[in-house]
Length: 580
Image (cartoon, rainbow, N blue to C red):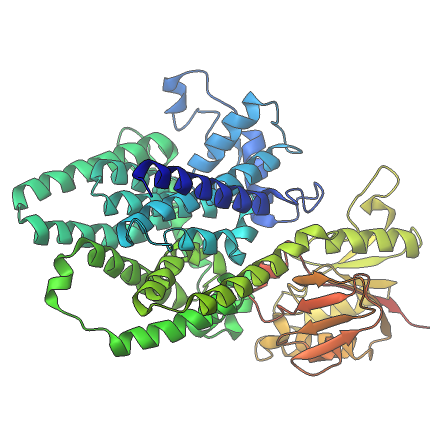
């Protein structure tokens, strides 16, 4: 095939993969129907709607008076990068989508676009690894397009997809030895989230390869200094309020970082961190990556391929001087380094690992190439990966479980009924219309995250005497607290007795939206996968059947996934009624 035809075909394929990926990320964009039920996104939405564009460059850089600075709008604790909220605000103003009720949609669209752009970067990295005629050039991009975690994070207005793209672009330009462009992307990554600094060892590794290849120490020093200055300038421009003066670090910026770090202390009391008390570092992270991140088909194939590769590969010092080998070495080093670091932290949430997901697919594609995996076997793996990704994607094709629960409450519970909500979780029902609003029901807040004391339970026991229905709007509390009975012995017993209907309340409704496929020709829901909640499903650990579900089909239980994977866009809701 002539070069220009090959380039045209490559462009067409890349556009098709890009379009598929973007459609998966934009579909069901308003999945919570303007309910703002992702807490991090809700905070960013509040900040983005309250800040305003400056009238001049000097005002933009004025930390203490800029209308774009969150701290000047009573958001003194702001630990995210400012680039994502700046670009979101600018586009929202330009297209008349500003304000709390609209701007988050702009953020979600940008999140989806930025994540999809990773597909293009992966293609250009692949061109450095594989032969120009190789059919594997598009494999990493295709795998990333249908991977679960990137699809989910693209539906949220948060900084993770922005961060991941700029880190990937930084790596891409390093592969092409475009250090100036790489330093710009690194600076932009830092303005999305300061954790981008973890990429510094990889940048250093590429500079070391440059020294090995060309042995020009003086030139390398100049490149390093110029790159560092460029990244600093970019950070100074797009994260201006991290500074107080030209280059003096803002004390508030340092204080916020220290406060954030304190939340990861096992001895501190921070409700979202309770789930980590029952988790084993490294192991739990690997489990989340395998099941819910890249998906079991690719993960299992990757492990097998890696074992085969290690047993067959012949390593030589000459490979270090090969540009392709240097890229592959950097890919594996980055995966291992970030996994070991983040996975060993007390709080090792799934989204912290998103920067290595593109690299996992690069590594898998490289192993496929080196092991010359049979095309039929590869096709089976790809089909299974596709099914796995679409199974998760399906949650955006069904009504949001909290919306379903709210509609049921309005239809079945009399107005004026006293409902409970758990502290640190969103209350139900959600306001759906002028005549269906939360204030129709008196709410009693149960502070179940508080330390187990006699005083806590004296208060809760008195509260329970007055409520008509116990409503748990997600699995945030009841899926984490009972797993640490040593810290919460009484609260654990409370949940167990409630589920066993020993407290004078009986379960009358349950809503869930597991990943899977609705199949109208079935008459029941079949759930597969491990669970930590046998007292809820009343079945064995790996399989259960629901003969009264709303959407019959086959579903994958993700009960053992990290809390944030389910409680935002497909939580489980339980409703108990006081029995006669």
